[in-house]
Image (cartoon, rainbow, N blue to C red; front, side):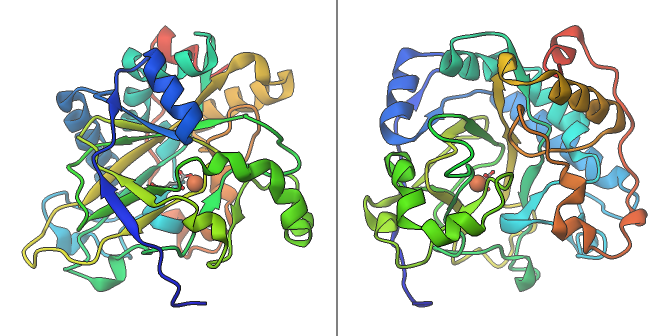
Length: 330
Ligand SMILES: O=C(O)CCC(=O)C(=O)O
Ligand SMILES: [Fe+2]
């Protein structure tokens, strides 16, 4: 069923204030929610600048104003959907800046009803203008609809993931796609996909759906319009992916999408062993996944281990963090 096409609706969905009751009601009901201006437009610009600082400091020859220097030889290794997961990005100044913005934490504090939260050390999604090089185009359509939670080892509501959008969005550019209300299907997955689920190692929180799964068309798929600084939150049980649009103006010569991945979860969920691993990760600039109570080293993702010349990337320097930021580590 390779030609099975899911219609994706680019949509202006409601945008809620960070920390509002309404944001949580919408999230519980729909499985996702857009938080209005989690970062101010100025903070979003600053984050993007800091991301370019990170990319240029890798020492591979990337120059922010010259897309000719953004070739695969220079660009950090990408995982699915143009996500940069490794090489110290989870401890870059950009990612730590975002984590230090109180309005971001406020959204997660409302989700979990506690201020005592830890942050993920995950990466960013950066899409290069593929009119310049078609191989830069990330996947479109239903290619990787997934959930980010193991259907057996992690039952129930466990994690709300976040993505802070840093650039204007459009249907042509593409972006995150969610199937509204699909978190409600999660509990049935072990029965429905018993063989697939059994094959999935208990510590791998990534489950993909076949193209013809009726859940993918249970509700019209939504690609939400987001302003720079808006944050999308979604339940890890909600079926989602990112999808590249189909046309770009020929003269496009800047990044088309930049989204900082961020997730905060209650500290009380982490064992002492996990806390120690997190302290070590922060010391050594080890990036992780969205989970704060589980530890998976993103520098050991297969796509990274398979990458050639990994030594060519200069990692960022260890930052001196504020007390506010440090409290998010352990
Ligand atoms: O880039 C996106 O919008 C999708 C990212 C994603 O699937 C994730 O962070 O779990
Ligand atoms: Fe995901």
